[in-house]
Image (cartoon, rainbow over all chains, first blue to last red; front, side, top):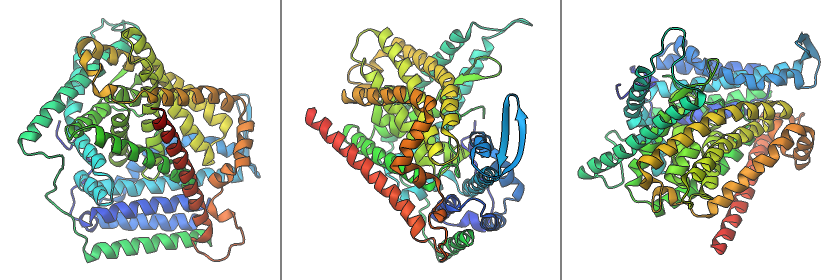
Length: 263
Length: 312
């Protein structure tokens, strides 16, 4: 497996790609907070927030299909919110019978449900743009600049660096399990659920030992190269005038979205 | 990649700002504690170890075993991380895992990340380690493994309960629906967690007992963790049936405390004839309420910490 197997970064030469990662992180978070603050049913504000997304998308040259396709990831979670369709007091919109329940969808319930979905959908899209236009190490570096404690960013950097190595390890373990789990046609391989759980647990234990021992070797290798407990970066970020301009512009737009949402 | 997260990663847009801010407050406070503790107790060697261990948890979440009807059991890892690395390091490792899941895979939101870290990282570590610590001095491995299994199951249940409470406070779902639904689903998921944790720990006991014995990272946590874990577990065990069977009672308590209003109503509706189109007072007051909540929690936590220190 290659080191960037998990990467969501899309190599492109675009305005957004070249922005300082700090700007992108801050704008993304402000945008998501703004969405959460918008009242239910603020359709105009939602539309303007979406226009803002479109603008960011155009300047990132990623194409609409890319973000739209990936933005569906948060949808399954909507199941949890589905009960508010029926439980909010309000005028009935539609009612139907499901098994033994009489369900009535109310207008306030529908309004709230749709608003939650839209907020979530808008928010996840800018997060997708953020990771698609920023290399992960740059992202971590941005968080370091934003005063996230170094110990956390360093752990995250290591996690990112060794994730693909350990994933390879997992794939090897799974391949080994599979190759020892032959079954004749019509029969299931292996023992009962408990037995299978035990095998999975042994694999996790094995993976733990291999990771533990590997971290020892990694540490020794790093020591021999002069590690003193601190990581350095080869591309330090510097805010330029256009970074300040974009931040100011984005915050102004988000502020206007908030005002529209409250009119 | 075939990696299937538990239905506990809350996406952005599902929690109100009020709930998100409170969760961030608790999370930041706890992480601050764990960073200062780990910095004191461990050398620079621990940082690569914790990083690789975070990757290990991430990778271990891919290991699954078929149960029935296409479903499969797999690992969340909070209890296991805390048991093998000690509670503070376990929390940091889980935080890194959840942060990367949110940043790289959009599994869980960014602004609600505080809540996700609290639910899946901090509480699972505290409960998992705390219960295990109460027997970790024993020489009988069978007892230790049995308790570790219960601890792993309860850690998942704790996360599920707090997640459903956050969703309820945000007005996403009804208490009488979300609490039983989340608890039942996770009672089953938790069994997978418990089985994998027990047999993984059993494997480590057999092959490298030194990693879990005296003087290992695992033994770093103080005995007080047993009380912390026991207390949280007790609250979950007592509270879950109450929340599922008597949601109206809980709703009334939250209403009396003013929590429900602060959590659910969007800031704009507090003053309906508010004409100035400003972000203004109302949003600010919500955030202020959140900050006050965080301060109260912080003071209580500090007082508890003081009390513990005095005892020790």
